[in-house]
Image (cartoon, rainbow, N blue to C red):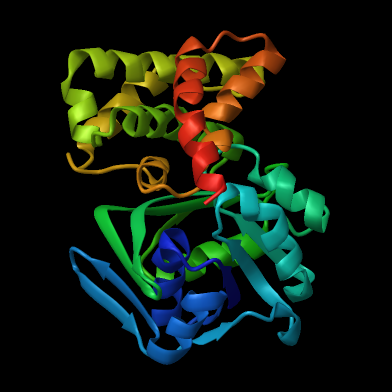
Amino acid sequence: MRIAIVGIGGVGAAFGAPLAAAGEDVVFVARGETLRALKEHGLILESEDGSLVLPELHATDDPASLPPVDAILLAVKSWQVGDAARLAAPMVGPHTVVVPLQNGVEATERATSALGPGPVAVGLCGTVSWIVAPGRIRSAGGIRYIQFAEPDGRPSARLERLRDAFVRAGVRAEIPQDVGAALWRKFLFIAPIGAIGAASRVPIGTIRAVPESRALLERGMREVLALARARGIGLPDAVIGETMRFTDSLGAGATSSLHRDLIEGRRSELDDLAGAVVRLGREAGVPVPVHETLYASLLPLELAARVR
């Protein structure tokens, strides 16, 4: 398949590098120092199982110079989705599928606003990956999965082809029957764990080990569950226990991207995680006091990062 990866951070590298290594026709869309590093040295994806090195790859900052591709993965931060989708527009042909992979539950709407409804699917992924240096990404924790589906749930040959390409590359890829529920399952985990980690400045292992912070995490999850149900998303009661067990399975030193970004003084996805819970909770009339407190506590850090 001809596949474009827009954004070469932790997510873009974690899913783009295996596709390229497996022989798919992959182009990496990047800019600045990242583009220079990709052109000069290629891409390195480090993991506990060893490094995947792509010394030669196709990288560009000019999608308009490319023909249409079969699939586009938007691997930028949540607030960049609209701009990334517009940048990718020249690569969209009549059969192209665009898959946003951001945290949160609103990326598909933003991509659709930029490109129209035809090309855009619903997507989500899981990976603990981060930038070590331009063109050099570290992936840890043994988690790497990707899910996507058409917004209306209909069968899709274009997404089946993309899933098969990931499977050939050794990446766990699925087309869930209810992608909305899958998206909110992830949101139920990442919104409270990211905010609690950033507010407490401790990794997941400490959060889950301290009874008070563990209880806070569970209360945050229950807020997201109530919000999901108010929006017509069918998540079962068991999702809380399942998500807590998933939390317990993670490496003790694991942190979320929101945590890392805020602690290191970078702009984060706070508005699309805890902030979105607060905003959507108000719209639905669902009380979310845990997320209101966390969002208010972290917002000064977020605003300071935006002016640097």
